[in-house]
Length: 205
Image (cartoon, rainbow, N blue to C red):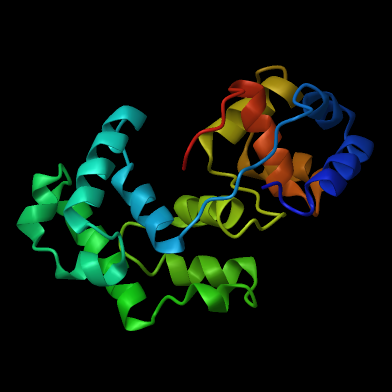
């Protein structure tokens, strides 16, 4: 399902930034596809850290089979040795357990996030071991569908801005924010199209 703001954002970005407009026109029938369950999305992000997409999928499938239902309560009930047997490192077992505990205890309540601003949600998420700002920003974009997130530390965004706006030259975080001023309040949408300019096939975060 297309985010409700998507077409409006495309029109606004195309008017305010000719470079972005040209990128958008290359992908006329594509749009961000929202992710589902919050706990599963965050757990999957942890599983996939620092391993290939193929390896992450294999580990996730074993993890999901072991948990039967990938819920905070089910994961909390699993022994660490079972999680290790799925291919998770000791560190990721710790991270997944901490995430499940945050949900099960009510420290993370997805229903509450709709009334919170982006930085407040990020602050809650990075309190979980294994979730840094980048993962939290991806969650805001893909799960909460927040329209104006600018993940300045994302390597793909950096590479795309260098290619499309800087002739391949390096750019600092300050420079990225300067380029992105023209995209407000649709920086998530602009970022998504810049990712497409590098790889037309959307990545599962």
